[in-house]
Amino acid sequence: MSKESLTKLISLDNVCTFKAEIVVRLKLNNKQKEVMLAQHSDYSKTHNLTFLLNEHQGFNAPKTNTTPYFYLGFLPQSTARSKTIQGYRANDKDFSFPNCDANLNSYIAFYTGEQNINHTISQSDFMMGWINQAKLIPAERYLPDDYFMKFEMHMGGCGGLMSYSNNTAAVGCVIGMF
Image (cartoon, rainbow, N blue to C red; front, side, top):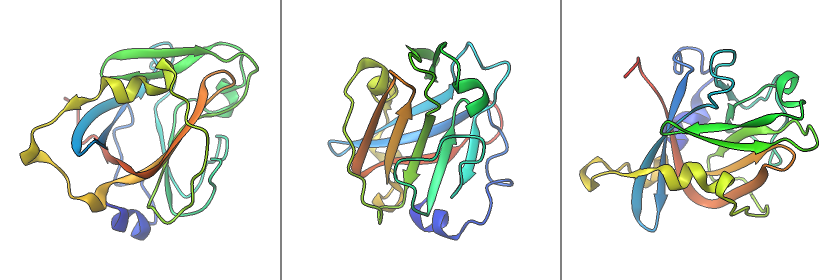
């Protein structure tokens, strides 16, 4: 979805109806890549992904809590509060971390670009896994720049916190099943 559409949406209820996966397009070094994100396989049978607009009900608030934002929640607070193995799935590969202190963070928040995001960038294999798993796409399928947003990813206790303050990621809901 474009940054403009994100600012005009009232609800995601009729936009993102298939909640098992979401497509994220990344723009890095003037190349575009795509990755399919899903719930970690340990949780995929019990928890769908959660897509929220300008809210985080049932999840920890993003560090940059200014609107508008698209919130991609993985594990709700009721599950994330456990000292268990948690994470996400990117292009059919699990990325895991031990939630060492039962911290409740389990999300990626995408921002239109007006927000000021200044957080530490965690370059761990876990946090970079989804970016490194993304596959290059042909130039004729590139999206225009107004689709790309800043993002913040926060996982755990012992997972990490990272953000990109340049417009790097575009999100799109999966329509139907592949």
